[in-house]
Length: 361
Image 1 (tube, rainbow, N blue to C red):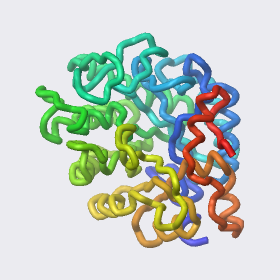
Image 2 (tube, one colour; image 1 turned 180 degrees about the vertical axis):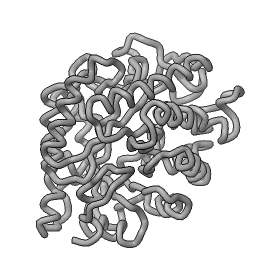
Image 3 (cartoon, rainbow, N blue to C red; image 1 turned 135 degrees about the vertical axis):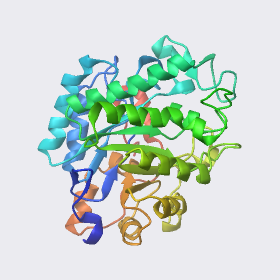
């Protein structure tokens, strides 16, 4: 089956294929953010499906950063025992799993947390409720929270962690001039805006060492007026590589980006697929670490082409796994028909009903 199904590794993490299940909220944690039996079964099924790497849905590192209902949390040591059962289930089925660490920033669900939303800049557009601007001391607290989340993930047996610096969440908010108009050392030019992300990377490396796989999901472009552009994004990726990050997942867009959000509907033809491919090629030109490309990949031929032409080292998908968690095994067996996902983006709405994310068809 060629390069797509060859065994590879990322900083010692051995992967059985170059197909990654990208992160998404599942709505299957319990009401306190704890790992539930439902969530364990969900990832066990995914592991049986043959993906090389599974990335969990974003897990909040501190309570005020929770984005939505039944979102996984890694803000407490009490989370570790059940999370360990999740990683054990994945490993029993030959899979590898990394935890995505996140903070929602101004997009936090204040009705759930009972806490004010913390913004990079107070009073900016995009906030739907009252927000408080982060102080320098609070930023340092968030850096510590990410490092603590990474430490808990390793204790629970995760094979690595991924920092969520995309889709308009807090780390992306720092990077983006559309959200960040601070006038202190965390605002202004790119070298200031990237500081929190680099500080988190350094803190995690200081706690867990160089041998623990550390990935970053990064917007290639915000598709917002005055937002992060591909030029700045590639520079950020180069800085991350210098600090010891092991792989970059290239995504794009925010919830404010209209038709240019990260998950786009109406993917019908091959021409609709891999809409971040031109950006991924820019990252590949600049970086020596692996590039993972997500965004609208639906066909075996597309995934194969992206890897074999060097557009990306790995291809990532999410919604196809919701409809058909075993499609990677199907492709490996020789049945390379297009995945059954119809790209209507109704799966998140299903998740909000309380039964967890799922296909509406």
